[in-house]
Length: 384
Image (tube, rainbow, N blue to C red; front, side, top):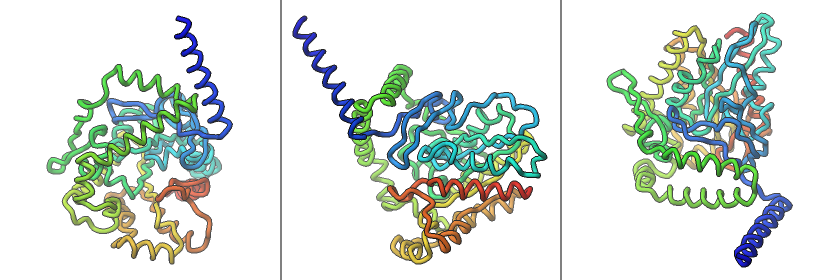
């Protein structure tokens, strides 16, 4: 017993010293902020919090409803206009302080707009990293409508949102996500991911461990090592190798030009059907629907650098997805704000980066979020 106590004491002391050393050295990793979900595959874990340091540097707090946002009552206050924003990691924006997120920039911009007749405006952030349009439609149905929004904005990230809507193009999350399939012109929900989703005991253990990870640098380090091992293993999975063999190492570049491979053609068909479904369902509930198309590198590069990268990557048409979505929106009478051309013009006149440069493409920095929020605000204030 005495030996066991000495071993336990030595282990505890080692962990305390390791924790102190990591904190003194400033070693930290991203907080664990996600949870499984039977509707969308995953979601932000309610009340989770911690630092996000892999890109940018911000303290992230998830509210009790699973949003990277402040708390909201379900019942909409009187004399209030609510705008719900759907999107992926570019909308959730863990990389910047929550007050610099484009949703909050937009909210401040709309505060003095005559178009809202002096009413208070709330811009609610429903963005979740990794989401595609299918999950955003399900989020609208199951989570957004209960808050009685007056309008909904879909922040569409053209680089990967189309790929996210097709299993073959999105094998990383193929077994964890819901998908919609087209039978004729009808969207049919495929919820087969539920069959492979973790058992409840595993979910509870992971949730408990996640809370520890967010408070301990030692467990963060352990979790990081596990995650890196999982990513290495994932890259060796047959479906990942098959995708690389089928579409090449730069599958994201398939978005830059009219689709040629069958999977990309189908991904576009499903995506446009999902956008139309979102528009129709929003209107049926008296909710105004808008599409905002976001940009990515190299669209935000100065002209010379942009042209060099287009040549090196053999990109056919860098602004094809933006023009296609703009034409789709016009055809179906959906208000759309297409930002990529405006960003390209901005990059030609300024040398200020709008995204973090640690990764390629990087998430938006404070300046990028300010650009988005103000651009949307200008259109909404003008009543468009």
